[in-house]
Length: 311
Image 1 (cartoon, helix red, strand yellow):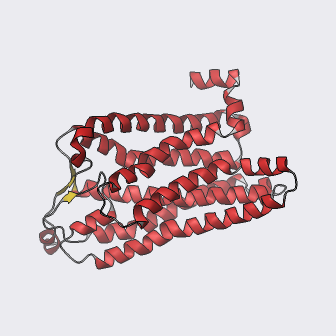
Image 2 (image 1 turned 135 degrees about the vertical axis):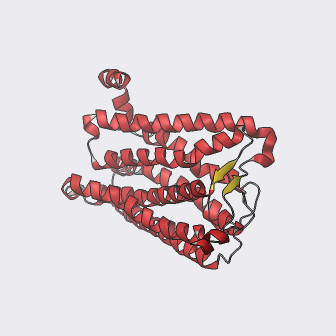
Image 3 (image 1 turned 90 degrees about the vertical axis):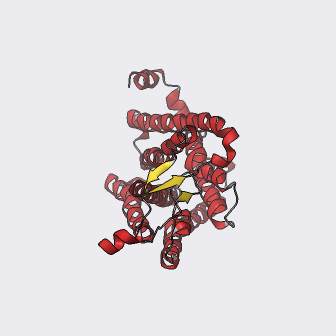
């Protein structure tokens, strides 16, 4: 135990965030704060609306409400700390706090990947098995499918987090990011980070690529089915049930691929990371409402509006 204590001398890390762009600190603070408020408010509104409207008691809206709750948790892991760092001089985060944030961020990110795959499965069943859909997607199965991403993600994220925390951090403690992430921390380690880096790559494969392949497969199946529908109106109706999810999944995976697949090291990497940590979660409530006829119809219901206002 004494040997481990002597190996790691770093007690805190410094999140540099956007300190290189000091002239934009206040602008960034108010912009990100506004997006954070909109994100939390928009996703809470979706949850309340789905709970209050009886016609939304369907598997699709159940998963949308779970996704909205996940988005609130996901943005709240990194954004509050970023907002503090933008307006105070002390940008430190404790060693334990850093790895708690790291674990929570990665676990919730993986949960989002798998929940998007579950939502794609739901749309695939709805379009390809419309008569048996409600029988297949029972409430029990919906709950099991909704909690599966949480269970698998917290297991996948645990191993690389523990291996990275076990590295020797003997001096350098400035993290060139606005939150604690695996690669920036592994780059600061004084000991060999090869094993933790390999495990991180393997975990990333199961965390993002595996659900992405499933999503791709489900949508190929959906497209084949829709293309076989003869009427234009029928095709539009079938596609409208999954278009919002397709847009959200494309935006999320597109931004993640840009950040993690391209060569790293650019000073603009942190701005790109803002895309999937706050910009896309802010846009998602609008995508699910503005493109959804049922939601727009429900919002025009005066009785529902009154109930919503009282809540």
